Image: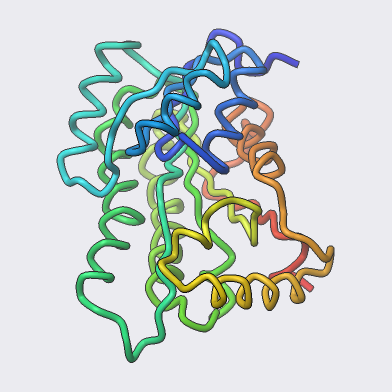
Length: 248
């Protein structure tokens, strides 16, 4: 199946985990993919993962990043067919310990970044194209210590609906994929001590009816579907992929 043959997709935060798995899936289905990230080593590996994956250093938390990326994408491709706003991270802190620096860093990357990228790259998306945002089941569960992360993801769910309404006149669909616990380095990047990360992971796994963490490739499958023409009558929607954790 070559759903993306002749199409170009941009994925922010695509040098690892869900982003890279989605990039590989789209490239294998014939698409050209540009992934962005900040880690030079990961970008190099992403570039080597498939001949149709291009890479570009871009920090989603930088207020100038979106405009710079928009200019570069226009130079490289002219127009694009899809945009996956995937860049994001989480710091898990109880409300008593939340700092203004933590607040700003998470909202800068997880909320301001996607919204500004949608603004700057939206005009480059062809009529009938697709935008995808990465939300999270954390927005629905009231998870301990997730006040900042869950709030940013709730904001993205709202942004998905608003963008879907605003881009509908150009027949551009805007949807979200909401992952549950996935086997990536996400928890390692939370800044928590190793024993705390292990304990949190075990606690979360016990809440998943299917009894395991998901794989990045499983989120990639849902993401590719939403970015493809197979989802041509879906906009403003969110697909949850969480092993039943938020549903059962």
